Length: 202
Length: 202
Image (cartoon, rainbow over all chains, first blue to last red; front, side, top):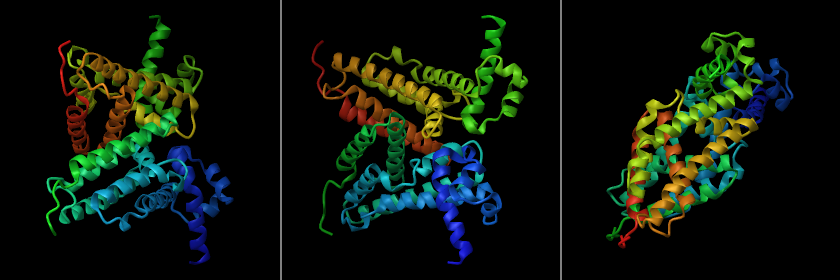
């Protein structure tokens, strides 16, 4: 990594918590200068503008979120248990996130009536996460662990919607209970309605 | 209503879609002047500042949202069907909202790392909505329509979390499907796990 690339990376890492906590509009140049210890010229030598920096910061924050949510998932042999593990990671691993909560939620809400660059990044992030869960589900169906009537994409969206909503409510109430209750609800749903009833020999 | 009160009300009504779409930070004085047709002095004669105006605008937008979500609910005799009606209203009645989507979600996300005035309004709104659904549930338990093992507050939070999350995903994807799928999921859950199994004679 060249010195310029390293500086660029440093700026992104330091900007990410600001954008994730204060939003695109709420993050000022003064905030960015204070966090990075650089002057305006020192920051924007590396980016075409605030939008590009915010987009890179989103990708950085999202990558960390995804890594935490998928941690240990590949080691779990059963498809339903894999989905439960991603839910568990979502509920428990919030300490590993860039401060400010789920970057997808923050960016989706702020960008939904403007800022097409950030909106496109958030949509791509959602699509990627949906595809990850869909692959786990499809594989579980193939292995007769998940009921074949389940539509992978629909189930993935349901899980993501449920977790993001519970996170929103938990954060607003400053109380983990809605997230824990949602995990319990989803776990019961997965056991009762998603897990294959019969396990025919492979 | 005095002329001053009417002007204040007009400002709030015109400011509400701006704050709901662009957020507190994203709404400029120029935006507010353009929407109201007033100069700065004409606006801030009626409010102590942008925070007070945004808080009033939130309450206005939220009141419209709640009215839409409770529309026709009191006419439904059964407790489970009442909950299903509020879910249906949430999924279908979005046209009646102030533009920009659910004010609770927008304000909760923007205010979660700052802006304590708006955060307090969003918390109060969530509390009020939770209490409404909890009362419907408690009444349903009393009338033996809802299983007595159900905790009203927990069920209310689950419904609210699920709907807000599905709305987030639907808006990001610009696609109603996640909201409709969530309604179907909640309806099935209410029928299978919330509706009382036996109906002892009153």
